[in-house]
Length: 292
Image 1 (cartoon, rainbow, N blue to C red):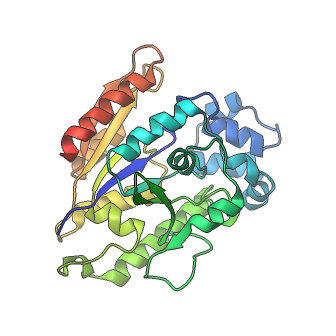
Image 2 (cartoon, rainbow, N blue to C red; image 1 turned 90 degrees about the vertical axis):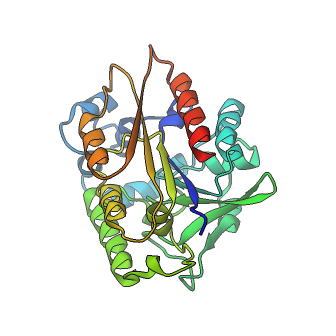
């Protein structure tokens, strides 16, 4: 069986381009100005819990009111950069972003409509109709370079505020959903020629290249999966984590130690000044070598 090659993309690359706001900027907006971005960044609590404070525990309502803000926009420069990632041949891209920069890059556009996105939505044969929340089997299908590419928004997507994972309650529910799916499959992964039917399958069985995310320890769904992958007895792919850090962020010692224990391969790149893209370039060329 050919091991699928999966790109796992966080918001880091997008942050290198002007249009993109930080997590704390986003929460500040959802708080209707009650908290500034600086105040939120100084709050000593995990990001999913900050969302509850920022919205006065009205996460769902605030997301619905502001959904259009989460669609994102893309500059030519950003599209060119993201297309480099498509050019590497990934057919499946898993992203924690709610926004649609990847879809825009594949199509070469600067913005995207809800109608267009609705037409891209597809699901695997594991389900009969689209899941409303906790989208394990749903992806956006785009054509790029004459090939179908599947973009999996694992923490939900902007056009469906109900699906967006923000706040510990939703992280807990998503983790439970992943665990139930894992229990339901039993030892299916050991069956000859098992076909991946969810992003969870791809994550566990594929070679996963993680880039552009801090892999915060509060993202319990991802840590549960990394742990689950390490325990899998069937033939599973490798996990490579690219830690791109600056003096301001510091190397992710705790995450790196955990990843090491959980059989993942950590590659660290230190940013000089504020030139994050130069380090992303190095990480991408390392990825190319490994994929060969």
